[in-house]
Image (cartoon, rainbow, N blue to C red):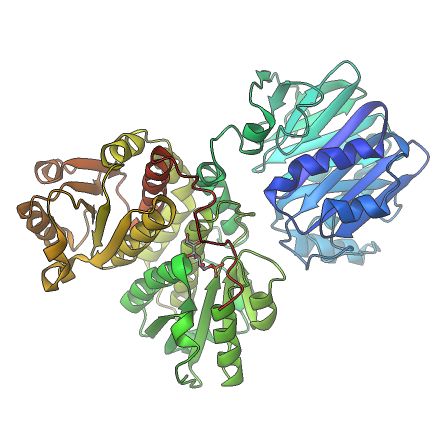
Length: 603
Ligand code: F6R
């Protein structure tokens, strides 16, 4: 989820590109850079940190004919000046900015190095500039088309060549790209915010589109060069709405980004026969692991809990999970067959970091799961599985929780594969994970979630219940609701009700029950009956086609049928949207819940 902006047409000052980057700042990033040309040479300036740092080292008054700029959210290679975009070829004439991940970059890089190309960065992006260099025979558009045929993965790119300053080429497969032109300039960008200043009539490119821009004229084609007609959209949003893609809040936008985030998490991690391949972990003898220690806080802890249920069901392992603030002060037993998994979206959570340090001190090995390349936890762990969800601005975790789940499922499945335990059921689980972006897209667009939230916005208490693997969903649902709507919400394994919590229930204390058609369905139904007998109102989340549930629940939100262990993934957007709508309807800002910070760097 990096940011791209390219400007071309009449001459303009480099300051315009800086202004474009400023419009992308809200997305979060670790470095920024610009490549621009006036036709004689390519000027490339990059800087780690804020756009203001770039501003300090760039000649803003310089007049150019075309330029591309980028804010980077690292995926391959640490955030530093060298890895910042744009990336150039050996001749120093071609510059590329890129969002997304090139899945086959390693093979491509090895081949390019053999053919004599010199690489400067550790990024996957740099292969694109060198490939375009090889394919360039005077026609940049054709060189890009020839390069696109070789690239695997998800990407949006913008390319310029200093010998032809009136031409810019962009392409999209999996990452957004928008173009808009006025009578002087064309602007190509990863979202509409930098374009609005120039025009409000834009074209949202579709996957598989290439845009050829000459001056202020554009042509859109497919990857084979066949011309396509794309409709214009008139943007009526103000700038702040545009930052949020037209959504009212970042949290809502980020929930809608879930399908795209999952696709990024899966890039390069699934083999053609629906088995996981986590090459990062090849050096760990995971087939021999008997004990897994899981450490995390908050939402990340709940993702870990899902893993515990999953791994213990299919593998002969003991999974011990603890919240990091407890774990770090307890004795740690590390044996030869122990591995620790530290889950932290930010990679900076103080308690999780200290737990990693304690494990390392005790001689243990740590696999981190994080969304932030180069964060402290990733640096201090032995290896990191990156979530690739892109920056998350809403304080409450949404798309990053989903990507944690996806990676943890893949990790469990990878260990199963390593132990030669693979069978058809596992391929089916992987297949459903691969299809989950589509499934979740359908759930996210279910308007009923908002309607149900409207029925419950005025309650002061809520109890979330689930069984088995959805005990974690109940805890996460309650956390999401309480942190953004300030409703007192508690989560319990449903079987625990009669050991105390049921005493709370009355008509003013509703219950949110997870009741998928799984092996614990009948037990869950009995628990719902118990709560109904206390006159509590009940929202059930159930599997499509379950008509019986309507007889005992007051409101039902249906989701498509899934493998029973994947319901936490399927339910994730439901609990997030429910909490979001209640918070919004109560007049709170879900992006900035009181007393909370996105990164908890203190104990
Ligand atoms: C809740 C939430 C927090 C974080 C927790 C850990 O929505 O976001 O509970 O999950 O503070 O943060 P990370 O994953 O950054 O270690």
